[in-house]
Each structure stands twice: as C-alpha cells, then as structure tokens.
Length: 475
Ligand SMILES: Cc1cc2nc3c(=O)[nH]c(=O)nc-3n(C[C@H](O)[C@H](O)[C@H](O)COP(=O)(O)OP(=O)(O)OC[C@H]3O[C@@H](n4cnc5c(N)ncnc54)[C@H](O)[C@@H]3O)c2cc1C
Image (cartoon, rainbow, N blue to C red; front, top):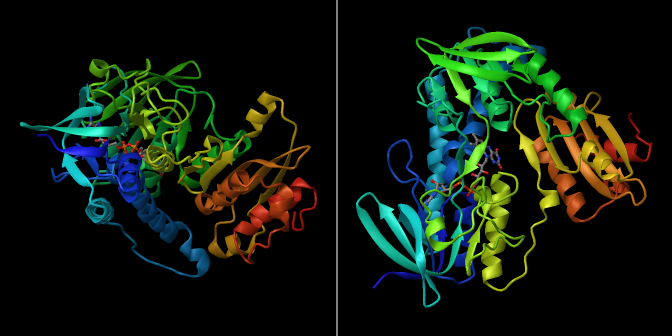
C-alpha cells in the first residue's frame, strides 16, 4: 500500500519548502519531493535560491565588495593596506559553506515539522477516489505516493540561448557562474538583467574586465527610468561594467577563448572573453511533471496556469513560485507557498502582488516597490513625487556610500503612496518601509510625520516623503 499524505509538495525551493512547513504547522501530514543534487552529488534542499541563486550570489557579492572597498575606499578612512590580495578558491569555499548551512537548515526544519523528505523526480500519475497518485523516481528506485492536495513548486531553470550549448566550463549558466574558483581575466555576460548585473559585479570588483551585452534597448526596463539611468551611470563608472544595450547577438565560437559576434549601433563587433555567462532569463520547470497526461493546464511559455489563489485547473492541485505567472522572486514564491497551505486549511490569506519588492544587489543597490513613474503616466494617474539623495546624509557619508537617490510617488489627490524607488546603500533594507507604506495604504504625509532615527539611511526616505509636499528640510 502506497504512503498517503494530506499534502504533497513537488519541489523544495523557497516556494515548496515553505509551503510544506506551513502545511505541517497547520496539522497536515506532509511530504516534499525534490530532485536537486548539490555539487557533491548529494540531495540538497532549498532549490535554485539556496543552491545556485540568491544565497551563493549574495555571498560572492559580499566578498568581492569587501575587496573592492579595501582597494578603493579604505584609504579615504586613513586605512592603508599594502599587498592586498584575494583567494578566489577560499571565497568560493566560504560561499559553499553558507549554502551547505542553509540547505542543511531546511532538512532540519523538515525533520522538526515531521515532513517526509523524498528525493527524486515527482510526476503526477492520476487521481482515484479523491487522491492524487504521484510517482517519485530516484534513478531506478520508483515509488508511488498518494495525496489529497498537491502543491507544484518546481521552479525554473536558465533560458537557453538558441544554438549555444552551456558547458559550464567556458560558457556558463547561473550554476557555472557561481561555481568559478578562478578569476577570469575577461568575462562576457549576455543579458543585463538582475543575474547578469550581479554576476558581472562580482568579477568586475575583483579586477576582471567585464562586458555585458543586452538585446533590449532600455536598461532595466521594469525599473523606474530615473533610477535606471542613475544605475547605468554608477555601474559603468563605479563598478566598471562595460554595458552595451540594444545589441544583436550573432555567432558564438569556442576555442582557447570565447568569441561573440554581435551588432551594435549598426556595426559588426566581436567580443573575446575567457568565460561567457548566459543570463537571458529563466523558464519554468514543467517537463517531467506529467502535466500533459493528467490534463494540468500549462500555457504556451510552459507556466502552470493558476488563478489569483494559485489554484490550477485540476481539483486540489495548486502551483506556486517561479513555475507560475508573476515575478520570479524567492519571497514571492514563499508568500504564495504560505497562502496556499493556509487556503488548504480553509483560511483566507491574501498576497498583494502590487507590494512585492524588487532588489538588485549591485553597488549601489537598487530596490523598488509599487508603481514606476512610467507606469503611472501610462495609466493616466495624477501623482506627485518627492526625491532626496544620500549625498548630504550623515550616515551615508560616514559609511562612505553617499551616492544614490530615494524617490517616492504618491497620488496627487489622496497622497497615498503608490511607489518607492531607491538606488543607494542598503536599498534592499530601506525598501521595506515602502512595502509597509503600500500595505498599510499610507500617505506620504504619514512617512513624513514618522520619527526616523538619526543618523540613519532611512532619513533619506523621510526627506523624500517631505519632498512630496515640497517641504524637505535638507533638500
Ligand atoms: C543567480 C540567481 C540569483 C537570484 N537572486 C535572487 C534574489 O536575490 N532574490 C530573489 O528573490 N530571487 C532571486 N533569484 C530567483 C529565485 O532563486 C527564484 O525566484 C526562487 O528560487 C523560486 O523558487 P521556487 O520554489 O519557485 O523554485 P526553485 O527555487 O527553482 O526550486 C524548485 C525545486 O524543484 C525541483 N524540481 C523541479 N522539478 C521537479 C520535479 N518534477 N520533481 C521534483 N523536484 C523538482 C528543482 O530541482 C528545485 O530544487 C535568483 C535566481 C538566480 C538564478
């Protein structure tokens, strides 16, 4: 007789493992199936985020940022260091240590919450007597389990560049880019999105010549364009990223180096690099899930089709995270995971897609929540804006990171905050004030009247709120 569970989650990335934990907390017998193996060949929970995404990239960004500061910023503090060097292999080992700690942490949480952790590929077989049958295949070992409710959280994988094979030796995807243990002299990146910019920043800070080629003509098209322009200038001048927009990629050839032929401003050009990262977006993982055989609706781009509650077209099958519509972000996946587990328990949770923050961990960081000026204009919404810079902020000057801007957008009539856009130090943390403001439907006056500690970076948010009413005190 097959094992039976109330809830079976397929995929143990942030969407899946969080859904499993919440389901177990709510008293459901829960299993989570995941097929990911770490570089040691052993099962590793946590999905893309913990293994080859958010966490390892942030570890490398921090190490490279320290080295960059040592070389370019410490002298200003009167700290002189001679003969500074870095050990790329050690930096990579530190990153691997953080990944192992967190993936083991998920295994611990599964045990603590009595979640059955099953390694292998999960495939939907069919439904009988109100129970879904799911095959779990790990090599030659195959078992079938049963579930009343299924949560699909199979995530995403890198979008391939047609005709180009990723060998993770010279031509790398995110996993290969995060596994480098030597610093390349010349690095090419195709794609100036979040992953391309973050990966490019890591190596540029360590002295690699980094060229980023992007097909789109507009830099960070989803971001507020005032902030995007400031970002392009900072990343080009400060970090030293050579970013070319609006290129048309041609042939890519491999030998001792990688040569990328491309067209830019109507001229044929060639980029020669030692390593090439392909970061042109991600596609959902639905292959092997058995979607077609059970009639699970998948759209033409491969996303599992869900309604606003994350329910699929099939009874008691839900889907969350990168495999469904919406931004491919770990925190969006987690919130959907929690919400689905609670819906299964009959609760009525709500995920507000308008208040999901976006962060790019470059230096300076870029973060935003809510609407951009471009979106408000396109929607014909009358708005007012308040901006303030970090240039005169005492904390930013003390940190030696006084570049950047905070911009708040508020409804012209009601003063309700509609968007917050930040480029500057700790933008990733500062944006949370904007998220709260949106969720609580705060007005710019609310932020303006809240006491912000001095001296803090958050005072720039305060000033931007005051500026919405044209009464900035330091502007
Ligand atoms: C380099 C990089 C940096 C990133 N940085 C950030 C960041 O800073 N912040 C942020 O919010 N997001 C970031 N992301 C995006 C983030 O990683 C994803 O949004 C997030 O991991 C999605 O979670 P998920 O649970 O939907 O899927 P995933 O994390 O992709 O997990 C899905 C899991 O399901 C497994 N699986 C797939 N199919 C099956 C099957 N049939 N059976 C069993 N198991 C299966 C997969 O192997 C995987 O383990 C980054 C991504 C990359 C690549």
